[in-house]
Amino acid sequence: MEGHMRGARIAFVPQNPLSSLTPHMKVGSQLDEAVRRHRNCSAKEARERTLHLLSATGLPNPTALYRRYPHQLSGGQRQRVVIAAALAGTPALIVLDEPTTALDRTTEVQILELIQRLRAEFNPGIVYVSHDLHVISQMCDRVLVMLDGVVVEEGAKERIFNAPRHEYTRTLLGTSSRLEKPQPIHSNPDNPLLSVRNLAFSYGSRPGWLRRLLRGNESAQAIKPTLQNISFEIGQGETLGLVGESGSGKSTAGNIVAGLQASAEGTLCFAGQPLPISTFKRSKEARRKIQIVFQDPLSSLNPRQRIGAILMRPLQIFHGMPREAARIRALKLLEDMSLPPEVFTKYPRQLSGGQQQRVAIARAFAAEPQLIICDEITSALDARIQLQILRLLKDLQRTTGTSLLFISHDLGVVREMADRVMVLQSGMIRESGTTESVFERPIDSYTKLLLGAAPGIRQHLAAASAHVS
Figure 1 (spheres, rainbow, N blue to C red):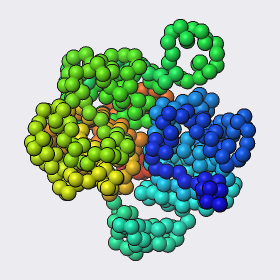
Figure 2: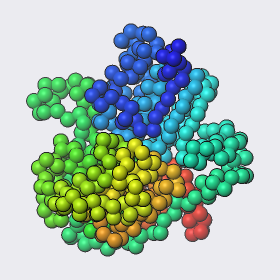
Figure 3: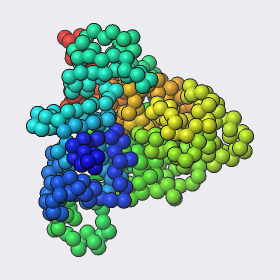
Figure 4: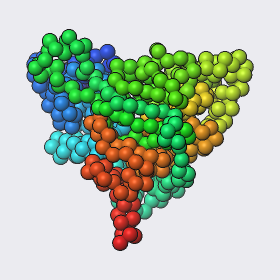
């Protein structure tokens, strides 16, 4: 009975799709397995149903994505695959745990509309877990507010949002994500810290002889390049914001700069010196100078090591510190991150999401890098913790002079963090410029679409327009 209920009648969509998808199985095979388990159908019928689910969740080119592995999808695409898996049965109850956290606003709207259509067609009960109050106001009839594992307030959506009774609820509703605007960076365009030229990457790339052999075959041409002739620069101490919808190539570009994806074309130049695309070909010093903070800290922190060991490792590898000196420095890093010293002896799973992300940031700064790639580092955090993390990051940047490649689909955060902005769509640059010019005077139609879909940005632009009038 329990097996029949789980998945078939009660479905669950987790927050972190990469942890819930089997890394060595192709996406299509995983969905086929779920469909056959719940529908008792043939392999052919399961494949047809899987392709329908991939299409229904708004994924481009389902036939091509069917053959990809999870790591070959963007964060937003992986989340939609997990949602498709939840729909493999005919659930009467769907529990959604932050299902749109990793998605840009335009894709988020599509997913929320999909959930609403599903609700209207099949009438399932929905439990929607989220820190995004804007989404809660759209999706829910009733709201429960929790603090430290206790329900502090419960009621109809209209009453909670218009007349909150508990102080914590009022704090959540009143939290502002505004940061102190950084001073513009006047970097030397003739001597940038990082220079990227004609970067191109595709998961569907094949050796030349195989490509010629399969020429004309639809499956060989199904997957379009992820990045196409991308060029940009980052100055010393500058923050470049990289924005775009899910699957636009933002994380891929960041991973290539970090040396995590080597099968790319183009050239990288760092501090005036050529930089190999593959991290295996980079010197230890080159690896030290470029660090990355990932979207999901729990997946990037070793679950079998204590926080102290995680922070001491880069200190010992890159700086050659003896154990005791590394321990003292690691404790200082925790203090800089506003984390208590007892965190030193804990495991990552014993920390909250915000604490885990602080540890990930501390580990990156432990190497004393010149460039840190921040890949959606606050997307899984509530507004209050998000604000703390961003303020912390800006303070550290002011102190160290570190440059940032700030990847995010949250345009409000990018507006406050970045000196310049580059807009990606389908692996191509649609627009780039200073933050002020891109947000206040967008030229490209796609940029205007992104800005129009973002809560808060829309009202800001309207107010700015009215003021000018």
